[in-house]
Length: 202
Image (tube, rainbow, N blue to C red; front, side):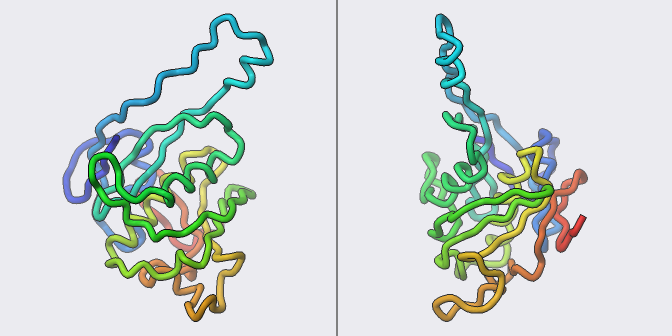
């Protein structure tokens, strides 16, 4: 696994440079150690149809753990809805093999749509309100933006909650979202200089 830690200074790879700052945090997220990827699928002596069936994509899953984003490389057997699969892995995780606790609410990713570079991620209502500090919320947001913008077709990210961006669900305000991370700041875009930009409409 690869850890992106706050408060230190070092050079990082291209992915680490995508979203090194949270929306309200002006601290860099450097320091990466390479994860061990799964062995590639053996394709010797396969027919053309069998070879097509074994095509897979190695992608990154980013787990927020307190003040750190931990990257893990996984192989998807099916490239269909790759971002949805990555986000589902993130939100289903509780504790990593290292013992680090994943600081995401126990929400379900209901769907992902991508249009004109904007990835809209729809969550279940249980995503609302984490009870975590502002910094932990921002790091969780960074992890989600990391996950989405690793795909070349995505340059901006927005959220909905059961299809809504405002109003209330079960007495909770949708636009308020996590408290310090609100839907009023959408969409978020990853900048080449390693920052996140709020409200980009490009």
